[in-house]
Image 1 (tube, rainbow over the protein chains, first blue to last red):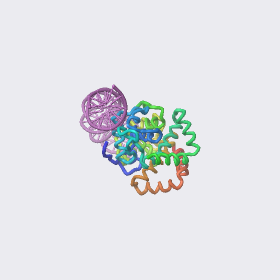
Image 2 (cartoon, chains in turn green, red, blue, yellow):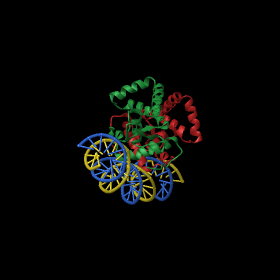
Image 3 (cartoon, rainbow over the protein chains, first blue to last red):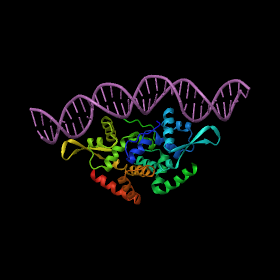
Image 4 (cartoon, rainbow over the protein chains, first blue to last red):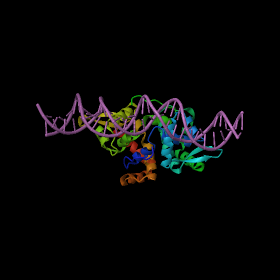
Length: 137
Length: 137
DNA sequence: AATTTTGCTTGCGTTTTGCAAGTGCAAATA
DNA sequence: TATTTGCACTTGCAAAACGCAAGCAAAATT
């Protein structure tokens, strides 16, 4: 999971080369919508990622400039993962996935509620959330 | 590749369960931006998908209502694959991937040119392209 | 009638995944 | 001070998925 082979010059292909699997965008999701993100926090997510897969995905995301590691303010044993600006820029894409899923799946109430807000002013939501994420990084 | 196991109720997770791999969205890309899409046409794409993987992904996408098979007007031996409305609805997401990649990768000139147009009026582009795709299906 | 095209399927070796257990270090506890 | 606990990974191994090449049946072409 160290070096990535680029399959073509297509932007979709190049993007999928980095985060095109079943787990990477779930990590990004947690970094966007959860409060804190330590290694253990990722493991606690509903989808139950295996610990070795988590480690490999975190490394790939870090290598490709999507996330960075930070010391935890309260403990030297903990590591805080955060999105880089490049990672924060995945927010519009993440919201479109949410909106697509909202149209075709039954979602949890609380997520549904958030998406109703988003639909009222998508650009505004993304702008504000982007600022909040950048401030946190 | 027949039945999909839903890992959680999260919309991101549910979406990735269907098309979260290195190949599915490349098939959707071809269906959105290439003229014709037969089985052989998919195989000709730059990324060189293996024929058995292609078959399994086409089946998954069809099973999940993203694409449908159609007879070819000129030949009974050929099969035309087309996006369903649910598949066409992936266009906004696809464009956000393009725009993200445009910001962080070097893209082919012609794709870059298209994206310049998109940036001028993203909603307009998506609206028109959606109509064009729905008319074709 | 024979050959080619098209849309797949099948076999098989390689890679990736998933699960469980283990390791090393910092911090908390006794 | 010694020991236990918590945290961030690593390792081993079986199972699943992938990638490549070859094969196959039906339709189209020659």
